[in-house]
Structures are given as structure tokens and as C-alpha cells.
Image (cartoon, rainbow, N blue to C red; front, side, top):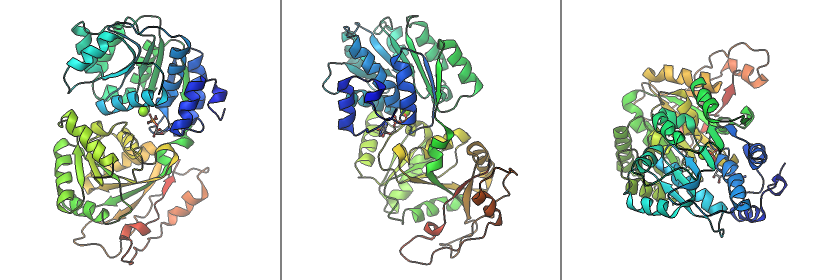
Length: 432
Ligand code: ADP
Ligand code: MG
């Protein structure tokens, strides 16, 4: 199935897709849409950037249109739960884009903003409600919302919702759902606790997993720079000397770290904004808009704030600190190389973070090209690629993985135009 019409979607949706410029379905869309149109429950396992939103939005919109009905007061026909406010807004926007011109009511409910407007929207009744779990539970407890009218229930980014401790509110919400409903469950990873939750909530689901070959991580050029902790900020500023790094998301582990790094970049003449959980909703939205619009070159973010954010043309993702949880690395680098484009991910790794790096290499089954910049005061004259650790012996290893065993050190560029690391052939070598 390589076009949307062949998938059986209603004409207004196909023309909306034409306007947006989606020419053909992504793999998860091609696999999920027919099953969802047929009313099946679904588990979708896919990395970020694979087009999950349209994979569920299109069939749901199709079914709403095929069976028009007044939105139930205080309730919604479609309920989508999402881990963060930004992601919730983005999902609602996708629904609006895909249903432009159609008479559907779509609203978002999340914390950090006043209740008033949300209560009003809920009272009228909605076709589509996108919510973060906490605030929705508030509205349920206050009797402002009910879930009696829900026909479609979508849990997006389930692994992240559980990481954020949303399991209790999710169970509270599920308790109020009608028994007869269609369930959609999306997660980038499927550890056993998530599988158990899916088994509880879904009925005879079909499972769709996008093939590992399509993993975002495969399209991102990945590099690691080993650097002493106190030198990280200078290193980061040096990276920004490369003008090709025109739109970069820099990840830090903590909120205070994000503020400090944004300040250091600003002081070095790089326009940077921080986004994290301690910022007000208004501040977060303004920062995102400035970054989207190109007014800021760098967005410094914590994992939670950046989850699922879809911004076009992110050239680089920089891990100022490696994440504690290896899975988060895959999500972070998925902020670049979206929708089939390429991107570069650079991780600054202090000696004390070597274990985290090993965990990431194990999870992604990649060996990331590494430059050693420890012990340097100024710009280094000739960084040397860390000799590749011998890959786990495997006869099926591709030839270039084996030839990497030789690990010939590479010389840095001496050209003034290109930064030293640009010459480093970024290679992520599969070691499976
Ligand atoms: P995910 O939820 O899997 O992280 P998104 O649904 O946010 O991914 O989609 C990632 C990007 O791909 C978005 O910019 C979206 O507009 C784009 N996209 C999705 N489906 C298509 C398609 N069929 N053709 C072109 N671009 C697409
Ligand atoms: Mg998504």
C-alpha cells in the first residue's frame, strides 16, 4: 500500500494529506491504518519520528466522519492521553490539520494553565480531547468531565507516561471508560511491565512494529566526544562555531543545568533558550515558537520537556550530559532526522559517564565514533578517534564493521572554515 487512497481513507482526509504534503504513508501508517479502520485494537511499537500521530489520527477521523454524531456533553468521542503538554498540543494540531474544513471540535486539556477555558470546552462536548493524565483526573474528580461518550481511547508514548509516574491516573481514567471502545496503544519500547498493561487494556490487539531498519537512530550520524566535565561548556561553545549547526537541541539532565547551559551559550553569543518543567506554560510555548521560527539557534531542554516535540529542520542534537536511562538517548536523537531526513547527534561524555555510554551502545547495538578531547585546554590540534573496541564476534557482521577493528586514527581538519570535528567521519557501526 503506497498511497493513502488505497488504504481506504475518506476523500476529505486524502485531500488534507495532499495539502499538508504527505504523499505516501510511512511504514507504521501503512500497517496500522487498515487494522484501525476495521475497528481492531492495536499495539504500535515504533521509535519517534516514524509518523505515529497520523497513523492513529487518520483512521479515527475517518470513523468519526463515517458515523457522525453529536459530541457528548462533558465528554468526548475520542480521548488521547499524552505524557506532556507540548506533545498534547502537537497531537491536537495534527488533528486540526488533518480535519481542516470539517465540523469537528478538538480541544486540549493539560496542567499549568487555568481551568476555566478547559471546563467550557468540555461542557460543550468534544469530538477529540487530547489530555495529559493529571489534569484530566482533576476534571473527572470535579465532575466537570466524564468519559461516558468515549468511543476511541489512545495512549501515546506509554513508556514515557509510565516513566513520569502516570500509571495511577491512567488506571483512574480507564476505570471511567465505557467497556465498548477501540483501544490504541503506542510505545517506543515494550518492556514487560508495559506489555502487561497493554494486555489488561486491549482486546485481541493486532501488533504493529516498524522494522528495526527504519529506526531513527540509523539515520542519525552519531558522535561522542570524551571531555573532562569542567570543559564541557567550552566544548559546547566550540561546537556552535560550526554554522551548519543552525538549529540544535541541547539536552541536560537537570532543570538548573538547562538554565546554566542556556546562559553560558547566550554569553558566548549563541542565542539560546531553556525549556523545562519549572517554566510556565507561556514561557515554554514562547521558547518553542522562537526556536521553531529560527530566532534562537539552541533550545536547551530536559528530557521531559523535549519528549515528542516535532520541530522541522533540527540539524543537531547535543547531549550535554548523557541520559541516565539508555532509552532516553534514542528519544533524544530522534528529535533530529525526522520524517526521513538526516541529522547529527553529538554526545559530550565525561570520564564518569563511560558506563552510561556503554549502556547506550548496548541498547542501540551501535558503536559510536568517539573523539578523545580529555586533557585539552584550548582547541585540540589533532583529535584521535578512539580505537574501536572489538565488536562482539559475529560472523554476520557487515564487512565495514570488521574493517573498523583496525580503527585507524583520523586526523583533524586544519582548515579554518571547518571545525576540527567535521572531518571525523561519523559512523555508527552495527555490532550485532
Ligand atoms: P512520532 O509520533 O512517531 O514521533 P510524528 O507523528 O510526530 O512521529 O511524525 C514525525 C514527522 O513526520 C512529523 O513532522 C510529521 O509531520 C511527518 N510525517 C508523518 N507522516 C508523514 C508522511 N506520511 N509523509 C511525510 N511526512 C510525514
Ligand atoms: Mg508521537
